[in-house]
Image 1 (cartoon, rainbow, N blue to C red):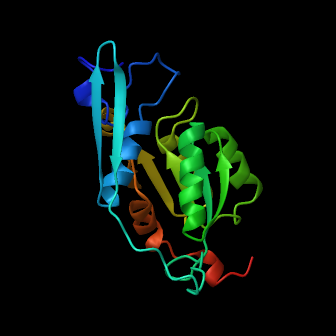
Image 2 (cartoon, rainbow, N blue to C red):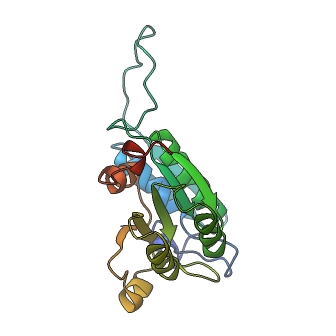
Length: 203
């Protein structure tokens, strides 16, 4: 039952009534983001003693023709990038790698900044780009980005975060930023300008 003070805020990114470490507050914000992106909406009704009901509205579309050719999984511009995803939250990490995979890119997932830095130190030319969360236990995304920039100066680095207060306080130090919760279209646009070193280097 979520009626009361929390009901007007349940779709806000990172709003949660759970204890620290027990939930991200990203779930419902992503649900309504997907619904809106598809031209739909989400309605919620909650009443003490009766529970909570969510209703998902999506537009009706015609089924594709059965003889239509299978849609290609290739990236929209034909470039499959090798992307290092750095994300400590399991749900967000799975969501992110799924999006990038559906866009035709190849991903490797590091669960924290230290793991990501070790990967790049071992193989500096392995990745075409890095997509890193900002707020993580241990080494944060900005610190990681600065270490990686010193290690591989031409490596494109894109940061992501939903913590506006952290971004206002610490900034992004000139690195590109995608705000959470993000959509597949926003992620695709963020990587559209990444050159893909594999185009000129067959490694």
